[in-house]
Amino acid sequence: MTSLVLNLSPNPYAANEIIFWMMGSLADRSWLHVAIAAPFMACGWWLIASTRRGLDALTLGEDAAASMGIDLNRLRLRLVIGVAASVGAATAVAGAIGFVGLVVPHLLRRAVGARPAALLAASALGGAAMVLAADIAVRLILPARDLKLGVVMALIGAPVFLRMIWRQRSGQ
Image (cartoon, rainbow, N blue to C red; front, side, top):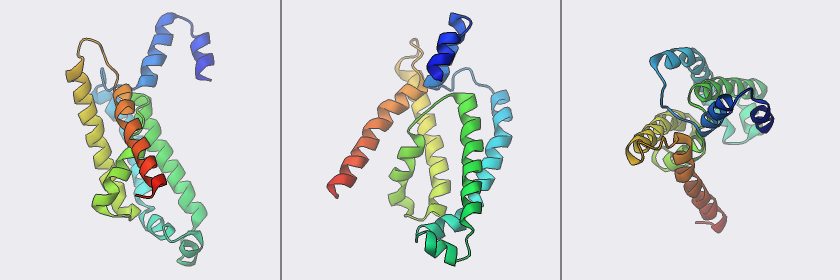
């Protein structure tokens, strides 16, 4: 679909904007963008935070969580809507910035433990710190070349993620 939209774009400027959005960036963003995205993100965060007990119970398995009184369908629906609202709003403003949600929770799991409830807040703060650090690096490394944040995050995140997979498969 992305290729179709790029192919059918009315002018080269529109195609260029789509490509830049796909690379992700915090450049040229203002408090207005934050104000537009904030209500959706806040609702998403609230929905996700309201699933803390259910997520902790789910680590024991679906049967155990159901026997503890967790409504699994409601839990799934809250998670899907919460993640869609928060990630969708952030992506609409900043573009596609990958690997944050894959790498940060795995890196922080050792510090806060395996409980999903404890990992939610730590991952949110850790993800924000990682994106901020990468954005600062983008602005300092090649300020004249307009290096995109999503590219830097992929250069950082892909090797870290591959290392985590390698370690898991080798049993370390």
